Length: 204
Image 1 (spheres, helix red, strand yellow):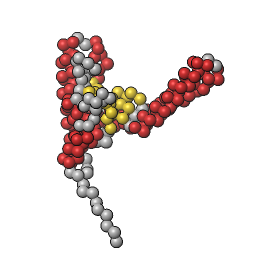
Image 2 (cartoon, rainbow, N blue to C red):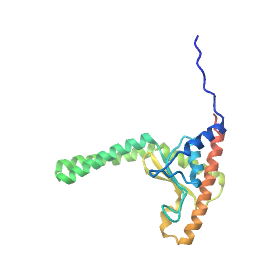
Image 3 (spheres, rainbow, N blue to C red):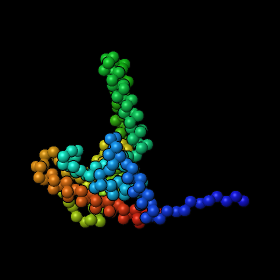
Image 4 (cartoon, helix red, strand yellow):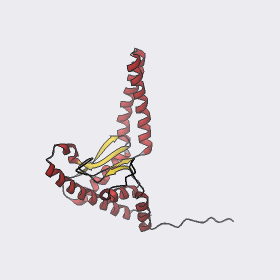
């Protein structure tokens, strides 16, 4: 009877440290590493099986004046992107040829995509998972805040966690931007601590 070696089960601490090492290798297209202020959120989300692709701690001199992190479901994003690119190609062909047949193909594909989007939104488990995590966080916190974090659906399989006030960020006076940035960074870090606590409670 042959015996196979079994891999030792990593402790929670070892899993956390291993994820820290992995996240330390994350960079943007220019090779810039993660901002320190968003790193714990990225670590926590990935430990919970929620894959991140982009993030920022928020800056006043460039980018957005609030923290955010983008989470992806690769399969759902690939499915949407393939169909969307097909529709775009048909649209370009229709504009170039200006024939009824070409527009028939394009408009039929566009309508089909819109129908798919309605269905995909109902099936979007990533959005539901993130929203559920945030709802539980605020239920435990027991208070509402003007820097409440929310989930923005970019497209099926791609979501971003950011403060709800992000939509009016450009309209805020400069001194308030700095204050809301600071408060939102604290809120994001609190959410990261909550997520890590939830992960600790999950069975190995």
